[in-house]
Length: 123
Image 1 (cartoon, rainbow, N blue to C red):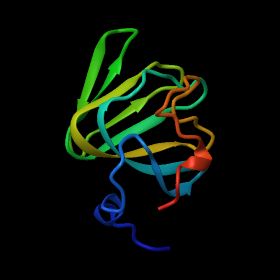
Image 2 (image 1 turned 30 degrees about the horizontal axis):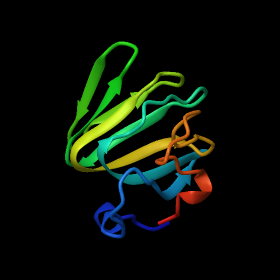
Image 3 (image 1 turned 180 degrees about the vertical axis):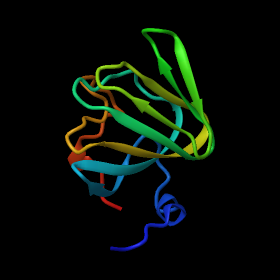
């Protein structure tokens, strides 16, 4: 058991929308990512996904309803399984993700941003 210092982990990479795996607990990966711009709208058929804003500000659009949830540092949003969502950030933002280990990065949508689980390095 070791302490994980998020600030030390975030300085190790610069790319956006490319999660890094911090560890796992109870069948869930804990991941960090830097985000900026628009991500692809997608859903995860069988998995919930939780987003925690660490630094900066970002939002999550829900195309079916037109709703937007905006998050700042220390704020969290849980997206239920099957709900289409589209994260976005006007400025570079640091986030922490909690999701089942089998969760596909962009759900059933394949784009240039898609990262297979084996392409998401442990950090």
